[in-house]
Image 1 (tube, rainbow, N blue to C red):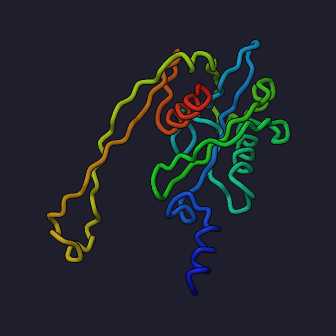
Image 2: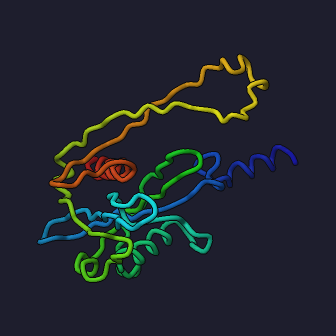
Length: 206
């Protein structure tokens, strides 16, 4: 191996961050729909019988399977499974910046236009308790509010303190995580969904 080969390898490296190839990768679709002539964003409420995050508000999406040819393919597949929307009828507007929750978890968001009537007729009630929409204009005019969550690092009991300077007295750097909240009627949109929604609104507002 020589420096020309190194340059070649660096040029073809398309990873977004260190650990992307081994991270839990998922993708979601931000569905834009027209309701009574007004553009709105559609959300799901996860069924109370779901094993993970029952009752949470989210966008359609999920894990990228090994058989999915791309993150977009996975987002459209999951949208079909959850909302009954034919992938061929989705007008994909484009990707957004990936949400890197941690080096072991990344979400690839996309925005697309879908037929609201198609959803109302066919969403999967085993996974989706209900769907609701928020007018896009309302989202553009109302700022979310933010709370900070302090995250403290706690090494496992078998952590090799003898390998690092200061050992068990090493000062781990705590960090804070921003949690955003959108309040619309009786719905509270927060967590990863709110973070991605805020990014989407900021992008289209610009």
